[in-house]
Image (cartoon, rainbow, N blue to C red):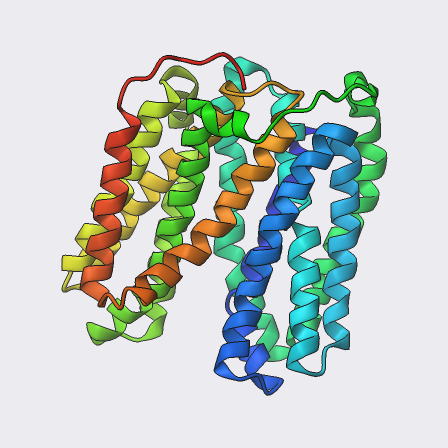
Length: 380
């Protein structure tokens, strides 16, 4: 069952990463202006944020099974809608629907996984799930980039839709028997939102998710510009991103992943985000491809430590009854981080070097704050 959930997590993020190389050019091919093109790219993350939060509430009310199956089927159907797109406005509507329903999947999947994982192995389990996210990040863009050139963007989405619908059918039959009996209870105590933000553990997990993707947004925005300034072509940007992804996956899968069950997640979280901050500073000063590869390898190690740590921290700080809602907010912060990361650097009109320095300092400050002692709270 756990391996099947990992497959769902992989294809959910695969769906996300296949969009990255093709969406802006697809919008332009439909005649979208620069503003509408940017809006089409960002619309998915915007509606995905709301989908994550809605999924969290529904997961705690109805249980992760029904929300997961619903998310898989509706996401598959929303991907098919791209075949009907002929103008930019229609694309925006489809992007909104796609992001909203795709937001149902990940919080429900991770809640299902967390509830089925014994506490002593929650760190290793989070690392393995992170590996599938990393593999999706490596394969997704390459898959869509190559296939879109040979066919079309809607065809790429049709392939992903087929996987989503198949997973929806399989999930219905494979996971139905695994529902926790408690999920069928009609008693759902009201949990105010403020509880999650007053709990130091969940708050730091949310902020860890935000700064993880804030950093990713900056990397996606500035790294190609840095590579161009140094006189290299865009292929180097791709291999640098692959380097980071491969290193992160190795951290997730190698026996070193046992560290996430033996060391306080706040310490590994601080180490991971701190190393990512140092990597941003190193990129800002790099003047050769070798240094960029070293920086991105370090960034991959930091990412590899950070992702399992924030998941472990969230699991430690919540109970099964409210974990769906917690994961909903958790992945909403993920989506917001990407948007704000790239947008803030652009809005502040920071250059490439100063943008990396600014981000590096922010990440290092957050890493320092994480190490400030706090009284371990009771579960949210």
